[in-house]
Structure formats: C-alpha cells, structure tokens
Length: 105
Image (cartoon, rainbow, N blue to C red):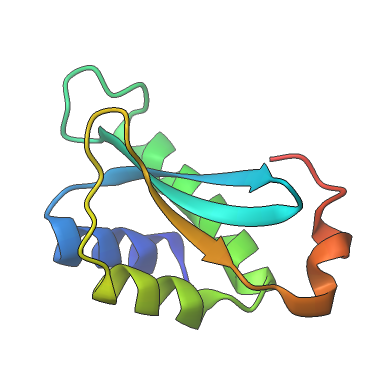
C-alpha cells in the first residue's frame, strides 16, 4: 500500500481526504481516521505534506503486513469520522506486536 492508495481508499469510502494517525493504547496499535480533512481551510498541512504523511503511515501498515486488515475495515465499516470522533481500526499484529511497541509514533 502506498500513500496514494490509502488516500484513494479514503476518497472512495467517505469522499474526503481525512487525516490518518497511528495510536498505541494498552499494548495495541490502532490506525485512526481522524475527523480533520485536507479540504478544510483550517487543515494544518498542505497537500504535499498530507500526501507525504499518508506515505509514512502506509509504510508502517505495509511493514506490519496489515494492508488487508485496513482495507477490509474501511470498506466494510458503517462508521464515519465526525467532530471529536475518529474511526479506530485495531490492528492484529500477532507475535510481532512487541517489536513495534518500542517505536514512537
């Protein structure tokens, strides 16, 4: 998965270029689709910065071999990001989880 593919997935599902963040909580890793989006005047990144950011997120997802999990979740969820409420995608990393918990996001 590339940043552009992740961006396309967001556009196809929700019609907006939502921000994507990685979060670690209680020993689990989540991909969070935030409520802020590129098309908002107040969005804190330019388009090139946003695409670079998505590229970095996609690199993690690819490295964790979680591309299919993320795609399946986004395609099947009925949730949508809204003010103050992100869509959280829990990642099942199996025994590799501990390797990644040492890194900071």
